[in-house]
Image (cartoon, rainbow, N blue to C red; front, top):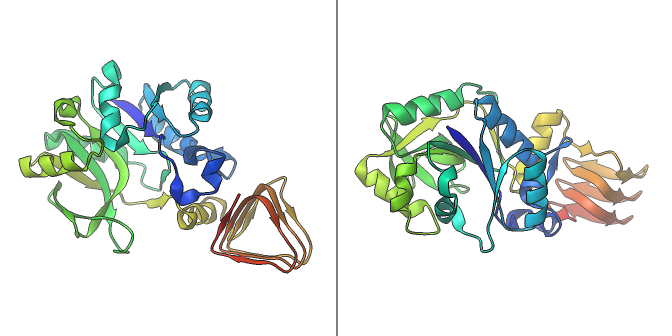
Amino acid sequence: MKGFILAAGFGTRLLPITHHVPKVLVELAGQPLADYSLRMLREAGIGEIGINAHHLAEQIVSYGKSRNLSVFRETEILGTGGYLSALGSFFNEDMLTVNGDALFFGDGAFTRRLRERHKAGSNLITLLLMPRLDKSDATGLDFSRGRVTGLGSGNFFFTGCQILSPEILPMVKHSSIVPLYRELIAAGKLGGEVFQGDWFDCGTRKGLLAAHRFVTGKDTFIYPGATVEPGAEIDRSVVYGGGIVRSGAELIDSILMKGEVASGTRIEGEILA
């Protein structure tokens, strides 16, 4: 089985950070997000791993070369389904793919179970799912007895990790993979397995802050190189090395990548870069 990290997206939910850096290269506790995905794939025993690049592509190309990855540069963004047809001979066996901003902790056996589910069900795609507790955030999936049976309002959601079989290639007709999911549901070939650990969508402010709290054990994390003056109030926030928080400033539930929060200024629920 091969591996693939999806990294071509624009990262609009993390703007303005992603004006400067692709979301998969945003730092989390000293490592780019993509390193967490890469470690997960390698711990699953996968040797040959690819990554796609479009937005701020040169940064991802450089990252991929430094990690000995196969890099697929998209001159036009191809989408969650369209990129598959551009992989050529790379996609010649089952492929475990992961969104580069999705992080998984605490369920070390999930890749083995996902693979077993894929094979046992003779599936063409098998999705890694979690129970959908907050029904405002994610598209619901109906799931029963190892198969996804419907899209829209079910009690599970897709975590961004899946196994794809190359037999799907003639069926990929859209930039989005969702129409193919619907086709496979009708054919009984869309499998599912439930992740039983801690999962984070780091492509959002909320998710990136939560991941920092989980990984570092701290409600607020200040990176080396940041300037936080005495008298500044910082709560449930992250300040990266280029950030400055002046005395008398307040930074609440926010991310400061670079720039300055001036004295007397209150920032809450924002991303500054």
